[in-house]
Image (cartoon, rainbow, N blue to C red; front, side, top):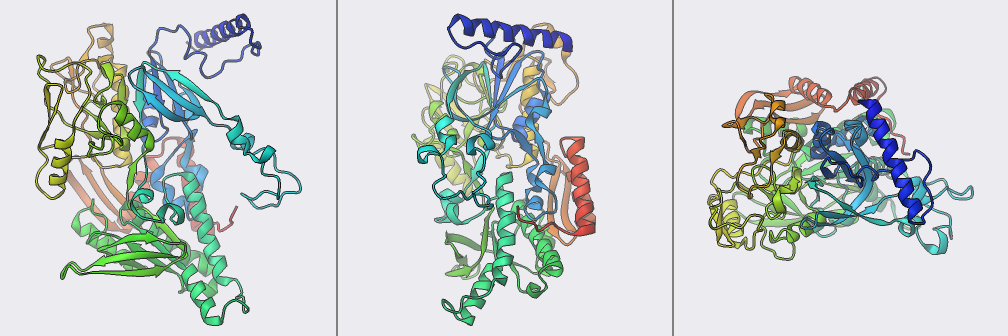
Length: 600
């Protein structure tokens, strides 16, 4: 099989060279096979384009059968990130490379192209992609006379004609597909909701975020120990400046915010004890949350235990408070008294502010919902702001089930079966005002039932239409589900709202007892999320572990037992043996030698 695949690749490369020669272009190197040669060949296998390299995309690529499909993944990030451990990497508990895995390692027979999807046309099934250059190629070699500080260039050496090489050399291409798997995720919500958050807050969504945050924490400690400028400030002003630098504010007390607060408290206690003894007891970590209790996803007993553990380690937990503006050296907060209902606005001086208070859809998602007539950014009628999909993850409005969307970028809408005499196959939603009103009512505890009329037909959101949590569990399970839909050759072309049907072909012999059971032997069941529980690290060797299977709670633990469960699950959920070994060694190294405070 491997020899046949290699022979096919060589033949396709030779055909591409002859085509280039016939067109008068320069001949390619003999045997060279670029990423799109196989994609643009006459291979009869359908083309599946995957956008993204996160949990959903990684699970799909790992499970999809590349003997039946040609698979191409496009993402600006050529690796998968184990995002639950970004908080640990931001303070040096584990290293960045220990929680990353090349996306090509997920499936060696799937192709990868590093680039950014700028636009999608679901009706012509094409994607506009801007190719990315490797960082070293984009920036060029560093001159010998350039300063040795990353991110700075010698005066007058910004690039030829004052332009960045990366902007001058990037090019755009158009990629056609048969089926699109949309898994681009979301972005931090700070930019849209709070003034100044984009400019002055750190996020924890990518490796670059963790790297920048790690450097900022080290800078804050060094800044607090720098000598005062007696000509510009007095001793009192210098003390205020040092106190501000040593104040760290975390906005949002979900699992990400709580885990970073716990990791940060560990980092400050450990680092100050070993390297900055004069700063011991002077650092301050403030966790700000708009709700009455932190970690709303957990059981109430675990929420209370988590807050008590954080406060015992010196973390200040401020509830019923939201950020209204973020400035360069302070955060303006608004606290609401739950008893009297009175609000008080105040300012908290800080050296580092971290945003973990929610997410929002990406611009590409808004543009896609417009293309699908789902009332996106232009129409303003989409109450979710995400790609609407049916229970089988098919995008509403896409022709013939050609678009599967999954992960944080989608909202699964449970729809009633379309009446055949009224519906037009492939028609998109035209008006979602009713759904928008229903969601506003649901947010106030008024239920979720709604009717959305379109093209003479009627869609209805049922009472059990509960949004899936934005977690790695959901995205990974959706990615595996979508891959098995394709592997078993389900016909995705029935109108959205009608179940995909197993094609009456020989492929039915490949059915097994996997994660995709069948209804009456032909119809695929809708995607069902299997909740396996929640985990959150609190610092000091303590964690919360809520283990369950679906809606059945098995047990809940807080403290050191929860910490052992937390580490066990995070270790076993790594996507490769390599990352498991690296994470295990990082934990051992930190335990023996402490966290590395070197700022590179």
